[in-house]
Amino acid sequence: MPDDSRAPIRTVLHLEPLSAASFEPFGQVIEASPGAAHHLINDGYAERYHDLARVDTASAGGRTLVNIFRARPRTLPLRLSLVERHLLGSQLFVPLSPQRFIVVVATAGPAPRPEALRCFLAGAGQGVNLSRGTWHHPLLALAAGGDFLVIDRGAPDTIEDCDVHRLDQTEVWIEA
Image (cartoon, rainbow, N blue to C red):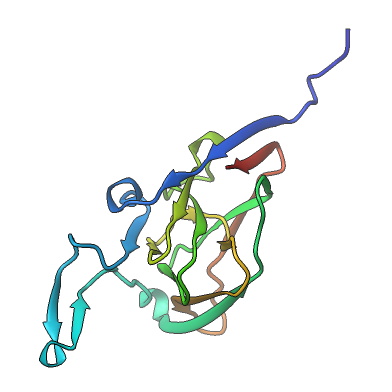
């Protein structure tokens, strides 16, 4: 009889639609939805969707950084190798063109078990703000031209704020 005690454990994550309610344990969804606070400005030529995320970057002397990340597209199925978290600040991702992307997250706390990971499909016109301490996979763009506005915490020279948890003991896959 073969010894399969060393066979890797396989966890499959299925894509969930991204909504404010389902994403609430991890942060905020950024979108111009009918439920968001909004009003007309500039003599009625613009509509302001107001206060969509809680950017949190001031801890331990941090400052807010505005960045553009250019992500290479990924294809499914996709094996994940790690998740990370930032204990000192939030991290916000908004695509600069209408495109879908994948957000893999787990709640703040100890390193997550693979079955605790959630996998969301952000639709065109949606972004996310990950709350401080939320475990997440690095950016997963699905299309070429994956430029994202990223707002996060810049640290003083001596403070690094990225804990990485490798998923070496199990196979974690995203399947469509």
